[in-house]
Length: 364
Image 1 (cartoon, rainbow, N blue to C red):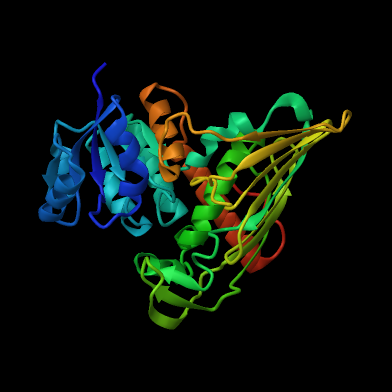
Image 2: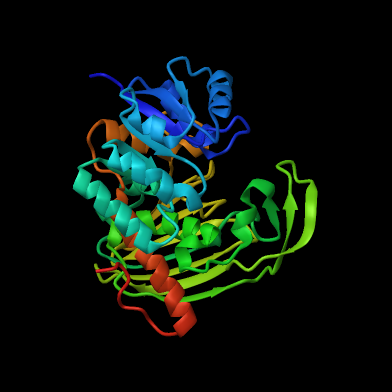
């Protein structure tokens, strides 16, 4: 079988998500071949190709020229959310498969439009909700019927509480069109809820409280030098969610910016699973993640660790698993999953602004 030919939008020479999380797998795998790079200019695309040694890749001046190429099967969009819609649409219209990082779009309405277009065109889609690929490790029948699940932890181990790296300056701003545009909030809630819902069902209701606990941030360099201090932050950095899943399982979710650690409990009628680690960001994972499975009857506790079978850097492990599944024709998170998550975010936002429990949380 010929490798899937990949074009990457947003492969920066200065690092960034595409270089950190996508390249390690794509350069190593025999199932894919990087044949195109589209950056803000052809020159910048060529610089990225040279820096990363992408001998089969061509630099494209714009998205239109990449879409016209007969040497690309799958386009990967790994840029900031606010450009997703305008970049993804021509890719789908050209009939190419597409992988888009989460959040899919800036609003649920944009996400619905893109999902419908992809469905009409018959293209395969992936959305980067990659935390879901470890669900078979987290849950087993040993705990019986799940009754309650609860997640507590720090969203970013301090990254966006009082400090923001310059390239993520926009994380400080509160959305004006629903929760999807609140980038950091969308990222950590979306990534955490994807494995949860694949394990135990979609949310059927949500009651939410969101707030800004750190009204000012310092803008810093990657090596922690302060560039600007006391900058106003309006984005919510604390979230509490509770409700019921379609399976009947009750859920409680509590995330905040400053601090560290994750505790995720799945409580069943025969036992309990506890996943712990240094970060709530399940899409990234953490080197110290481990699982404890307790059997109520015997009192025995079994301890296990999560292992990467692909031998990749931490940030690339879950994404590598998504690429593997996609190449093998297996189930991956799609734009349809992303639309559901966008509507959940908007319901969460509405619950906070209007009060009470929101029952319509998936858009259907």
